[in-house]
View 1 (cartoon, helix red, strand yellow):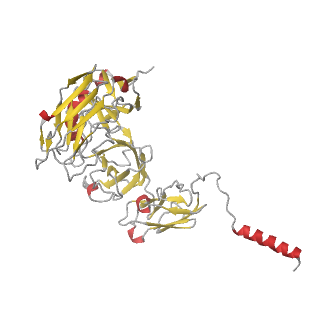
View 2 (tube, rainbow, N blue to C red):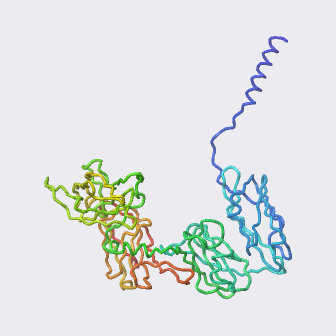
View 3 (cartoon, rainbow, N blue to C red):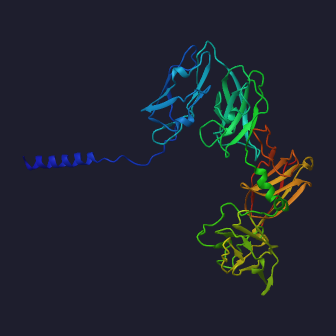
Length: 486
């Protein structure tokens, strides 16, 4: 081999080695396009056909996620249909033995089909076939509202379920529905391909995929009467609610809520982790630097115990404040909740003061007569300018014992009162987002009452102020619950 030929071979070797390690270029635009359906077999909308296998072909590689949850077949089958995928193909299988004669079936894969790389969801459409000589073509349309807020349900996952009118009204507690669909992100729904029959209709926001109302945390909604798709063509409104005794919780706080003072520890600042092997406690306040205003003057001072505080000795508790370099004793009251692990000290907190809480040895004892150890806590209260003010003007038509005004910060109620005037002013509001509601107090018990499926009782109506109010510190906010038309 000549030197020239040798150099050529070396060059080729380097080139080949380089080619073997080629790295594809990175970057580029992210694929945001969902898979496109190229073909489906058999064809959609066939009559006199028992479709047991549906093959869907797409323009790219796809995968299937949560098929058991997303795949819907109406009327509901006695056992679930199945889905599988391979390459660019998705296959839905329905056992022939599950199909009834002279019945229109609607199949929808929901949000289960996604592209392989970016998980873009295929916007599924209904596939329809009939085992008889005609299609059931009636429909029921409507919307779902969250009863406690009066706002449209935006979850996009609440199930709408139909049961035969001959079924028990409480069949939703123990059996799956005949027909089902889900709401969209606007809270609207449409049940299509229905026969000319009467139905019970329900909305269910569930935590699993059982299609049965069987858990306390689930939300249920129902229509008072049966619906017939041939004659009841107006949209159906379903208001979903939790059957937990929300009213019981509100009763405990009603006096404080109606005073306009926040009565509960804010969300996210619950009981600290304490060692239950010993009798210890924690005062929920910031004692880091008393030159900073940190203590909320619109709430009690909370003490958490590791064990039940069976005995409280108020003469071993002292509360004082500094005013012009003079220390003043402060009057206070205390409450102990039913668990005896949470104590609240209530005082007429003054703004911009440095407070000292002295807890002497034995101010609390547990069931074995163990003394709580002594401690001293110094903290600085906030001032008016750290809070916002909200003035709400309510139309005269709501001024009656049959209506309540409710203000919430997130899920926490901060004000609840009968509408006995047309102007409400709330002071000392923490900065943040607030919602305002008018409640139609049907039973006139001065609280919002949730619904009951077994008693066939609808929840009380809630009318929301359309906007979320951003309260800022040092600001005064005014709203008209129903602005006058210009």
